[in-house]
Amino acid sequence: MITAVGHADLTADTWELVRAELRKSLEGLPDDATGLVRAGAGLPLLFGRTVREAGRRLVVLLPERSGVFAGVPPRDRAAHRELLALAEGIRMLPFDPLDRDACVSADEQLVGGCGRLLAVWDGSPSSGRDATAHMVAYARARGIPVEVVWPTGAAREPAGPALSLSARAPGR
Image 1 (cartoon, one colour):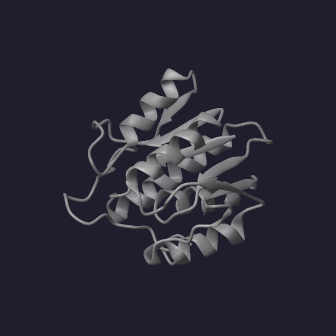
Image 2 (cartoon, rainbow, N blue to C red; image 1 turned 60 degrees about the vertical axis):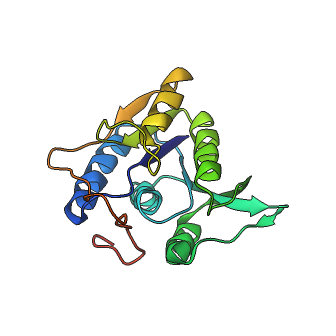
Image 3 (cartoon, rainbow, N blue to C red; image 1 turned 180 degrees about the vertical axis):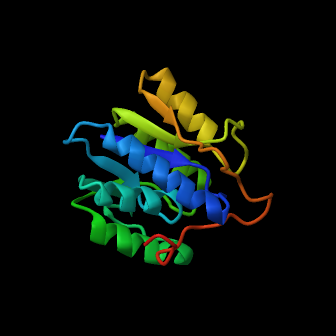
């Protein structure tokens, strides 16, 4: 399995640059490589779309609480619906999608269960909002190969609300 994690605050132009790089990365993998992603808007949705466009299987992790679907933040509902439509498999994982620490823990489980990590990362350290550097270190400490995806010209939005890739994003 292969997964992707990364910054959520990419500029509008960067989403397409990242998509092209993800496509290239998926092309070089064995035919049976399956994508695994935690459901959400932004990079999870972009990765899910790209995995399916490459003709590969996609498994989506959904949040669960007490054995049932935990629900999603309203801003992520369209992305969740699309990812479920793209998925060939679904796994439930206990975590609260509104709790940042729970999401980081879920991402650790996601990364720990994969054979390769694609990290959309500019090399910056982890912050209170962004745990990408932590996920890269987590994977490397476990011997999981990491491919950093940061194409020439990629940029992040200035500090403030993150730009989310919606279900109606360009390139769809």
